Image (cartoon, rainbow, N blue to C red; front, top):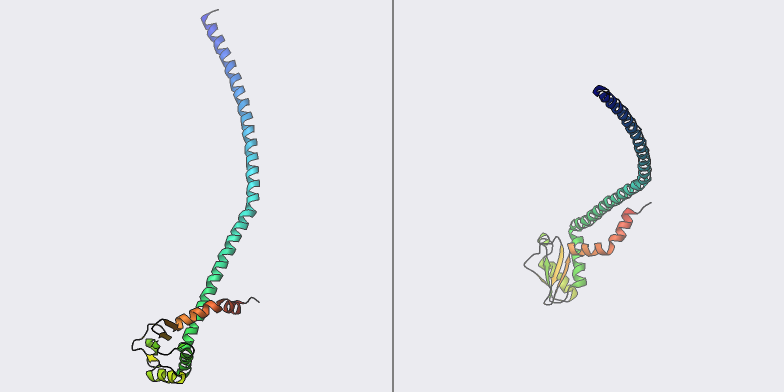
Length: 194
C-alpha cells in the first residue's frame, strides 16, 4: 500500500471513530439531559409541595404575630386611658370649690393626725390651708397640731410629720394607692365588652 492510501485509510477510520464518538456523546448527553430534566421536575414539584405546605403555617404565624401586636397596641391605649382617668381625678380634686377641698383635707387630718403632729402642705395650698384652719381642726379633735412654715413640692394633700414617722397623704400618693386598689375594677367598668 502506498503512503497516501494508508493516510486515507487512517483518516477514514478516524472519521468513522469520530462519528461514533459524537453519536455516543449525543446519546449520552440526551440521557443526561433527560435525567436532569426529570430530577428538575421532581425537585420543582417537591419545592412547590413544600411551599404549599408551608404557606398555611407561615400565614398562621403571621396572623398570630399580628394579633399579638394588635393586643399590645390595645393594651397600651387602655393604659393611656387609665392614666388620663387618674390624672383627671387629681385635677378634679384640685378644682374642687374651696369649702369642699378644705373638707377633704379636714377628713384627712381627722382620720390620721395625732397630738403633736406638724402639718406640711403644698405650695399650691398655701392660700387655702391656714394656721387658723389647722388650729380649728385640732381644737375639734382635742389635740395639738402645728402648720409647718415650709411647704412641700407635691400637688395637694398633706404630710403629717411626727417625731417617729411621717404620714404621706399627698394627692399623688393617695391616688397611686387608690389606683393599685381599684385599677382593675375601673378598667372593667371602662372597657367592659358588650
